[in-house]
Image 1 (tube, chains in turn purple, red):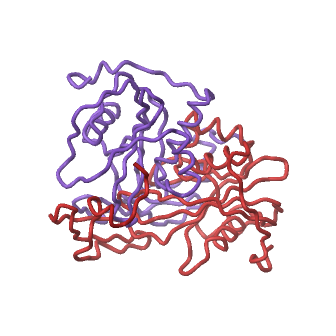
Image 2 (cartoon, rainbow over the protein chains, first blue to last red):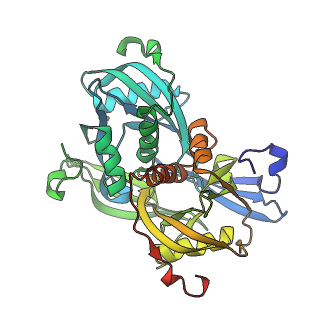
Length: 204
Length: 204
């Protein structure tokens, strides 16, 4: 069986919207509860977080190291090792978001960018998609953390990062997904389409 | 800088609980809003989903293929290719959960299991941790889908799966994380500690 078939062929799996209501809208979290029709005609409810989408950046230094962050993540009550990432502003292009977040959080700007792929973070209960970019030709300026944002920036070799993915030091799903990309790009198995950062404007 | 340092050394990153309130408790989603103290002494709020944790299983067939699922995931409005997975029941051992979910969703039981690692799915707004297991020595019985659960089971070679991770057919973060594990286990770079499924009781 091929994994992707035509929409019509998936009618035995698909769920259809019947009605939608706000579950809540907090300062950060926004959730909905939809009533849906199951493939067998019965109805059920789906509760999920509405998310604007996000971007994660794999910054490659000229010496082969990567730029990472250590950030306390309250929901999991620990300091998490992760690649720079952030949410899309309303209507923001993902590449522009990646350039903005890399600069704000780490102080780096990049001469070249490559779009890699995308990942759905929590398909059971969130609309979130994270766009994955590589960045190279990095130059370091001054970072511009948001008010109330606290994180350490550090560098590591790809080999160190892959080792941390194995030994449990890295548990963040987006960063583990980036490690899959990094490993296959560095081995030459997966090629990237690098583009000059023309769209970065004054920051490039 | 090493990625993990002592708790005391992370005081410049850590956030401390001041007070907690229920944001909402739906049939599926449960969320809290905590007021916290930032490292600089200011206060802020954190809204997050409280999740019981989950398990994902990488089932290896004797012919080298892996068992996958196609399931419509309402929040992202598409059929997602993913490894078998499910939420922990209250107090459930992750291995027992993996054995239960593999049987329920695919009909397979496994002679041997290996714990791989764990991933935090959405560190910004969910407590969810997913425990990753490999299973081998598979034998096929009858699947026992929950009421209202609809999914296709299919098999693929690891090479096909890795190709789908690159071309965007696979976007599910837990499955991309599993692909990192699969690639490194099959290459021999990462070793697993296989255990007989003694604890599976009647199903083993």
